[in-house]
Length: 240
Ligand SMILES: [Zn+2]
Image (cartoon, rainbow, N blue to C red; front, side, top):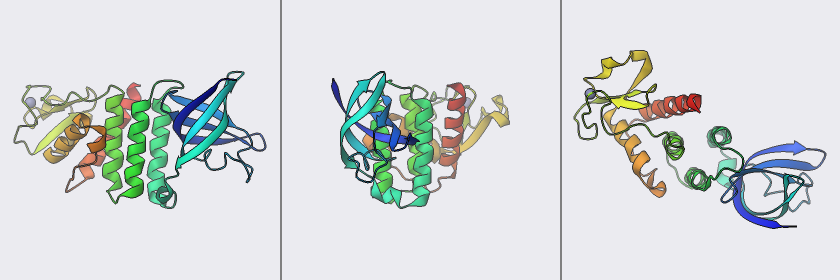
């Protein structure tokens, strides 16, 4: 029996038979995998903690008749503060739903795992605005998946948007590009959203910066950033 050691976080758990669970783990080397945790529902199970939603562990797995099974586990982080904060837990639940739909079984997702762990670590430990955190997560997630918007120039007149003095920038979610103030009417107003220049700068910062730094910006007002994150993620999901 070949044993495979991975690190990963449980992003879904479902009851299976009387005492077992099937857990979906986002792993560092195997991508997203489903594994059967035998006896995990029993109170004396060695898998009791590690088979729970949102617990990050080292897993030793083996394969049998096409399924992964847990052999042994060792908990690394339970993200305890998140578990007792209903609002944050709701945000994380939506994030794992999104992760489940954009990742495939056995597809390499080490970068996505690191992004998710980093994001929930920040939510767990720091008092950062969760709206900032979750929308930065969405922008970086779709950047990693290859869907970053064409960023630094107006898609109509090619003016540099980072250096311009426009008060607002317009995101055209059909073509996943940005427009300057002057060119906004080249796209139907129902097919674009208006964001502040500060929000635009924050979006570009998240797309370009190293994973460790993506939450290190501040905005006076998160409304536009939140609206962009929502529209961007929704339209990318439609294209997947
Ligand atoms: Zn323009």
